[in-house]
Image (cartoon, rainbow, N blue to C red):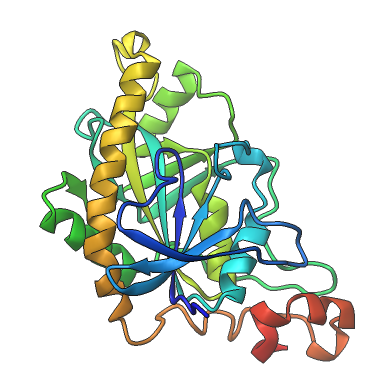
Length: 286
C-alpha cells in the first residue's frame, strides 16, 4: 500500500501530472464529507505522493463549493506531512507576466462564504497564522523553479476572492494599492486548514494573465489564457519533478507543534462526538 509523505493539490491545467506513475486510485472517507475527488497515489521521481484534483477531474466544482475541510482531512488521514498546492492566478503587477511563477508567502482574505477551521462543536482554539506558508517548503519550491529555468519569485502576496466572478477594475486597483502580487480563489482556506492540521503547506502560483487593472486586458482571449495554462503546466511538472525529491529529504515536519498552546477548551469538556470526529487531526492533543 502506498504511504505518501507528500500531497500535491493541482488546479487549473494540472489534472494530468507528467511523470507521475499512478499505482492506485483511492477514495478517502472523512467526517466532513467527500473530498474533491479520489486521490491518485503513486510515485514521482521515485517518491511516494498523493495527487488531488482540486476542482475534481473535468473541473466541475466552483471555488466556493470546494470541501476544503474534507480535502485537508483526507490528506492528513493518508499520512502526508507536506502539501504542495499548485494554482493558476491573475497577476496584479506588471513584472509578474503570464508564465511567471510566484512562491506565495502571504495571503489577504476577501472570501465571505467559506468554512476555514476544523474547530467548533465544543472545542475552541486560536492558531497562529502570521506566517501562513511553511518557509522550508516554499524555499525548496523556489530553488527547484530556478534550477529548471523558470521565471520565479521567492515571495508574494495572494489575494483570495470569493469568485466565481472575477474582480471589478476598482477592486483590482484596490488590491494593487495594498501591494498584493497575485489574485486567486482557492488557496487561503487550504493554508488555514493545513496549519490547523499541523501540515506543512506551500503555494506555487502560476500567472496566467494580468487581472483587469491592466490596460489591454480585455484583448486577452480564452485561447491565449488556455495556451498559457498549458505552458505553465509543463513548467510546473518540471519544477515538481525537481522539488519533490528534495521535499522528501526534509527530515522533520517543521509545522508540528502549532497546536501546543492553541486549544483553549478544557479537554474534559470537549464532547465525545467532537473528539471522535477530530481524532486523526488532534488525537494527541485531546
